Image 1 (cartoon, one colour):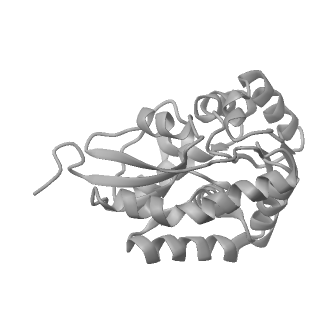
Image 2: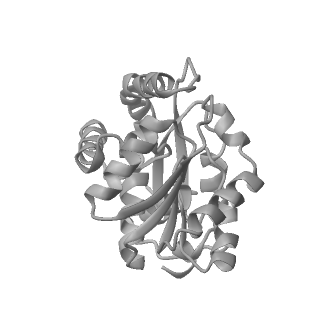
Length: 247
């Protein structure tokens, strides 16, 4: 029997309990016959002010992610999507691969991560020199830098917004993000990447590509694109950037 609404694919999505952006983002980019089913990682201490705070946040994610995967498996998803990004960059390229192996080992399913989605998008565009904006503390930015440089990209600049709590990431204004994009574009980069699934960038990235003349890869759009294309779903989505619209 086929699911009445998810008749093409059911995606199991893992996200922190503090994240208010990734779920509505995935819904706004929805296509017929594909449904997203969220399982929340319980974040008991959302303080991420400073490197130690961010490390504690990730420790909570590591402790809880197995149970979150097991819960979402009860709806019998076809594919796993990571609605969080910091952990997918941690430890560089090998760290991302180990993370995917972990989730696959628990679920038996293929996995879309933000880190790999950004890698695919940058290679698709032929980008070599990039700018990055994140909501992270310096330790998070170091891991992002490591991931991209290990892949052979030159990271011209990272703007880390150093959000003090996990929830406050969603409070970053469009004006702040627009200023960050303009600063990164001034570095003569080939593309801009935005990390942090609780940072609202999908709509702004779509607009910014027009006035910057550059690919602006919003991580939620890239992860959704990877999930759709991995599953043979080729619909184009408007309003979420060129990646989903043209590729």
